[in-house]
Image (cartoon, rainbow over the protein chains, first blue to last red):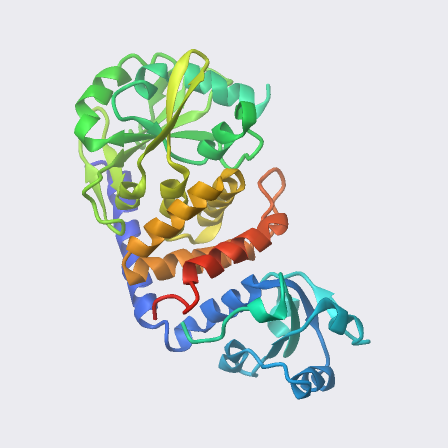
Amino acid sequence: MNPLMERRLRQLRSRVLVRSWEYRQRQHARGAWFRLRRVLTFAAEAYIVSPDDARQLVAEGRRPEPAGDEFEPPKLIVFATRERVARLRGARPVPVRLTRDLLAATCLVLVPFVTPASRGRTRRV
Amino acid sequence: MTFRDRLLATIRAAKPVLEAPGVMVVGSEVPNLLEPGAAATLIVSQDLDVGVPVEHHAEVKRQVAELHAFRASPEEPSVWVPREPGLLEVNFIGMDPTQDPAEAYVLDDDQLPLLVFGALSLVSPGVELDLMETRVRLPRAAGLVLEKLVTDRTGEKGERDLLVALGLLMTATPDDIDEVEIMFRRLRPELRHVVRSNLTILSLLEARPGMPDPGPHRADVAALLRRLEGEEGSDP
């Protein structure tokens, strides 16, 4: 067998093994990144906000996304409408990507694509 | 010379194998060829992936002798490099419909060895195009989308492959998306999870110069993820 192809095959099989391990770990800490990415996938916009603002949004009845609890320090992540975010003075928009700013943020407000009712479901997956 | 010129010139030069039984173009050039007029604006890579059904390997191997514009790479004989400028590399890949999507093997051969990717078992023949007097078979979009999404995607190459899935979704019809959902439900739980995971990665990718930008299509990716997960969420 061609050595390069053999190496590619070996690498591919190794990745499949790792992936299977990750799948088995998905309910545990290893799955936290998937759950965070999944919540962000349903966000059209993301804003870094102060803890006071984030707590205010929760007090208004918005449910914190459980995916945020899986990090240390925990992230308080809530969905809110664009109009509600516009009334938060200190809200700072950040790209919806895994940037340093977004990952370092402890309080995030996400604007859903369609309606708040259709935001990312929060069951552990 | 534009990328489209190079792609079409490569297709003309690769006619002997592209018209061999069962052969399909399966990689990053599919969305380019599916654009109206094969506009080829969704540039992700600089090669032409040619899927060879293992049951037709012998016929394709005979046709490879007619590829005068290319020669096999000495390092990797499944890759044929152009002898002249203005052409793309041709990358031969094995397809085995009986293979598990997570598996792979090498079909060893002195002249045309193939790395056979199990994920390509999800791919089935779709439209045929007539380009540069060459009959080009393309896969059905749904199967190729899932092939891109069930394969492990890490690093630069992985992200580019996800952009191919994006390009396919950009050109997909509602029927194609229905088919993606049907095929997705037939996958085993681990592979369904991989598909969902890759969709989240695709959604968060940064735009790259000259490549399809996920940004304007994030809502579509989110809608597809939600649809695949269904009302009750996806598998555990």
